[in-house]
Structures are given as C-alpha cells and as structure tokens.
Image (cartoon, rainbow, N blue to C red; front, side, top):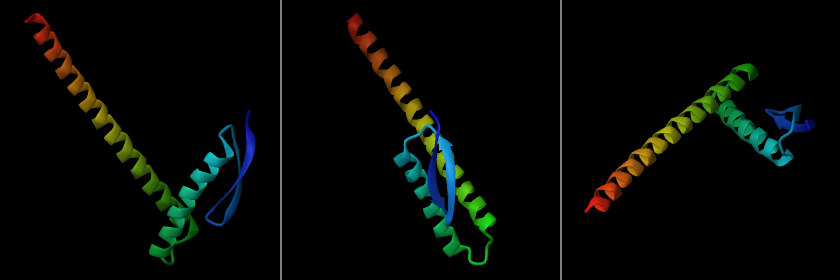
Length: 94
C-alpha cells in the first residue's frame, strides 16, 4: 500500500508516495542529497536546477556502469560454467 514518505534533498522537503520502506527512501534521498552537496561545492554559481541535473546525470552514469559490470560478470560466470560442464562431460567419458 502506497503511503507518503518525507525526505529532504538539496534543502527541499518532498513528500514521496511509495510502497518502499521509509529507511530505504531516506537512504536514496541521502545519496542524492550528498551528490547535490558535492556538486554545489564544485560548480559554484550553478543554478539549483543545473546542479540537480548534473547529479541525475552522475547517478545515471553510475547505474549504467554498474549494470554493464553486472552483465560482464554474468557473461564470465556463464562462460566458466560452460567450461566446467565441458570438462565434466569429457572426464565422465573416460
């Protein structure tokens, strides 16, 4: 059941409707807030919207890299599993 969770991101208080756990939503909001604070320090004079967009872009980049790495690990496990299976089949014939 969806309910409202209050979070603070970039100094703005937001009510988010979700069925996720409160602690999880606070953790996500904290991640975004830390990213925004870091960028504010690095991009002095940037508008709040620009900083938010840069934070979104950086988070999207991190997500994309993680997904790509996960796919690479899945490929490696699949290849290794096939190699082990081939070895077992060869040894079983002896």
